[in-house]
Each structure stands twice: as C-alpha cells, then as structure tokens.
Amino acid sequence: MTERIQLPTLSTEKDFDGDSFSPIYTTTVTVDGGAAAHGRASGRARSADGVLDLDLRMPAELGGDGRGTNPEQLFAAGFAACFHGALSLVARQEALDPDVISVAATVGFGRDPEDGGYLLRVDLVVTWPGADAEVATPLVEKAGSLCPYARMAWRGTPTTIALATP
Image 1 (tube, helix red, strand yellow):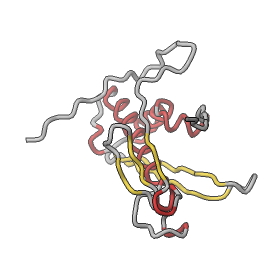
Image 2 (tube, helix red, strand yellow):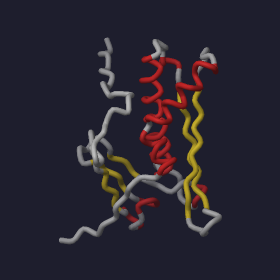
Image 3 (cartoon, one colour):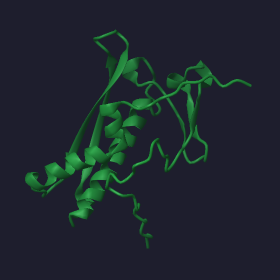
C-alpha cells in the first residue's frame, strides 16, 4: 500500500508584506568539472543533502555525448514541476481535481541576437483533459503569477556571484 504524500500548506494569497526577501526553503547544489574540467561536459551535480547526485553531460546537439542529464533538462524539470504545483493548488481551491493535469516545459538554448551571448527560452504547455477553457485559462494565469519560476522568467531573479576565498 502506498502512503499518501502530504500536500504543501503554502498560501496562494499574496499575503507577505515584509521589506525584503524571506526564504522559506534554501538548497545548495555543487557542480564540479569532472574529467574534462567542464561542468556541462563532464560535471557532477550534488545537493548538500545528498538526495541529488548525478552526472552532467553535454547534449549531442552541443557537441557532447548526450549520455547524461544537462542543465537545460534540470531547469525544464524544475520549471514544469513548480508550475504544476502552483496550478494544482489553485485548481484545488476551485474544487477541481488536478490529477489529470500535466505541464511540459521546453527549454531552448541558443544565441541572443542582441549581443551574441547565450540565452534560454522556455515554452510551457499545460494539458488539462476535460477542462473548460473558460475555467482553466484564469487558473493557469493565476498559477503563472504564483509560480516562482514563471515570476523569475518574467521579472528576472536577484543573483549574486562571488568568488569564495579560503
């Protein structure tokens, strides 16, 4: 018998009025360069708690062997999972069953036409069999305003980059 997983008790209301970012959960994943000394080509990603531990490889389309997970797949998985969670919460609030909902995230890695650098593009597709579009569309929009990945994509994310010193 499978034990039921406890659903999160996060609020869907925008009810925080603090002056600064207030983290609810923090995680750290460290990537090393592996045999090629290149995180994307031969790296290994490990979470601080040890739950995530996997090899990273370049996809064949970028010249790699394609025999491992790549950062774009990890990003797509995180984005799709987070959006699905937000949509599931708002669906439940409307007494709708989210069991049949799926979210596909397509992440494209390419060149930025503005400066020639690299850029990601994300397309999300929500599949909700049996849902009336007039009911589902506002819920998908609400999920987009709640999902931190979607908010990051639209607004940017405060980021710091620092060199650790011994």
